[in-house]
Every structure is written in structure tokens, then in C-alpha cells.
Length: 207
Ligand code: CDP
Ligand code: CDP
Image (cartoon, rainbow, N blue to C red):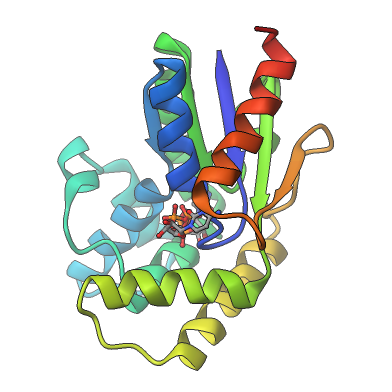
């Protein structure tokens, strides 16, 4: 059983996917970490995240420990992840890994292209979204909680720029799968979003 959770930045995909996974007894994979860790490797090497050869080599060299690094969030890491994610060879390098993870025991995966590319046959697909303003507020609050100084207007601008880049790229753009259930959480807190998602899962599997 695979549950696909896709959507734009800071929509609450990770929070929702983690709770669904715990509820359903499935492993959870935050696929954004793969792109973030790839971008981080390129930055560490002093490379340009838009360089296809360097980014592909970084994706192929990823180790599980890279995903646990503490420096995968923040404006620089956000931008680098989105840049490497637009490179077809990077996406190809990360595809098998994601599919094996899901196939082994079933899983809840969250990202941008789980329902469209990674698991197009997933029985449950959720597209979690919210207004850009609300998503920027959520990301801003997260930064504040981590003690990171940030400017709300800049958080919004960077989030919109990343969404635009993720939506317009030629390969695996951010778009809801035709059979995804769209969950607009602009007016839902995390508990209400979880309850709504669980109703979708239960309707699909019964019980
Ligand atoms: O947490 P947030 O929604 O801000 O980002 P993320 O899910 O960690 O993803 C970081 C970046 O990785 C995104 O902006 C996408 O460019 C890329 N990504 C992707 O292309 N495909 C995925 N399945 C997951 C992430
Ligand atoms: O993975 P993604 O970037 O889509 O979002 P996240 O890392 O799960 O972060 C979303 C933030 O918004 C977290 O701080 C949540 O507590 C909060 N939130 C949410 O997840 N869902 C809502 N419906 C409302 C708020």
C-alpha cells in the first residue's frame, strides 16, 4: 500500500504524511530530503546547483546519512534543492531509490511528483495545498520556532519563486495527479487536515 502526498512548499505535507504513516503502520519518506541533500552536497563542493553534471554526481553519491544532516533547511538549501530538482538526470538518479522504499513494505511518501511519476498507480493520492500567504505564515512560524531571524515578506517571495520554478519545470512539474484528492488546508489546522486525509484513506480502503 502506497499513499502519495504531494503539494507546494510548506503546505503541511510532511506533518500530514508522518501522522498518516503512524496511523497506518507504514514507513514514511520525505522525498524532499533527497533533493535537499543533493543540493547541499553541491553547495559543499562549491558547485552551482544548476550544473547538471555536478548535481547528477551529487545525487548518485547520496548516502542515507546525508538525509539526517541538520543543515538541509533555510533559504540557501531551499533554493539549491529546487535548482537540482529541475535537472532530469538528478530526478532519474533518485527515482529507483524512492520506488524501492515504497515497494518494500508500502509507505507514505510526500513530495511533488509521487502521485504523477514515482507511484502513478498509488491507490491513495492526496494533493495538499493552502494559499501562498498561509503557507508563508507557517514557514515563518517554523523559522521563528527554530530561532532563525526572517522577514515575512521575503519568506513569501522565496516560497512563491520556488513554487513557480517547481511548477514550470519540464520534468515532473508540481501538478496534482488527475486522480488526486485536493485538500485545501488554508482554513484547517493540522488536526483537521489529518482527519480529512484519514477520511479519504478510509473511503478508499473501507473500514
Ligand atoms: O518542505 P518544502 O515543501 O518546503 O520542500 P521539500 O518538500 O523539502 O522539497 C524541496 C524541493 O525539492 C522542492 O522545492 C522541489 O523542487 C524538490 N522536490 C521535488 O522536485 N520532488 C519531490 N518529490 C520532492 C521535492
Ligand atoms: O512538508 P511541508 O513543507 O509541506 O510542510 P511541513 O513541514 O509539514 O510544515 C507545515 C507547518 O505548518 C508545520 O509547522 C505544521 O504544524 C503547520 N500546519 C500544518 O502542517 N498543517 C495545517 N493544516 C496547518 C499548519
